[in-house]
Length: 198
Image (cartoon, rainbow, N blue to C red):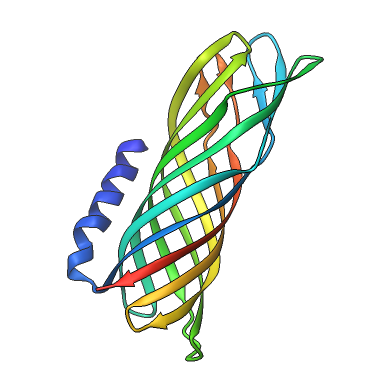
């Protein structure tokens, strides 16, 4: 599956120069990472997180019918607030970081009023790294897993070659495994960014 996703991202990237209205974009914003259930062979627990931040960059281009495709590189980080291991709850230092490579498709809805709503979806891969102390883990462990996202938002047209994007994203992954511990990764993302046409 991972090889298929990488090949899809590469195909989109190579196809961009042949498409109409190519663009690059950059965005950042709030990452609300939901509590993650943890399970090992001996016990269960939960991680809770502080709100974090995400940075995304993409290169894409338009298709016919107000569709566009892009390849996106993302980085997200959330500090760990506390951990429940069995019946024990304690404050926990450390963080969860995610680096993702996604292939996205959007549908724009031009209104002719200087604001274009859009919806989108994407699939890809994500390297999820946990830096924690518990469940027999002491330090950093990571796993590369399948990732997917759904997007909705709108673009304010600042000039013919620049748009201000405001959007919500639901970003999640296949359950990563850190050594012998299986976790979850589900997040809500609220982003602002700029899109530059060329």
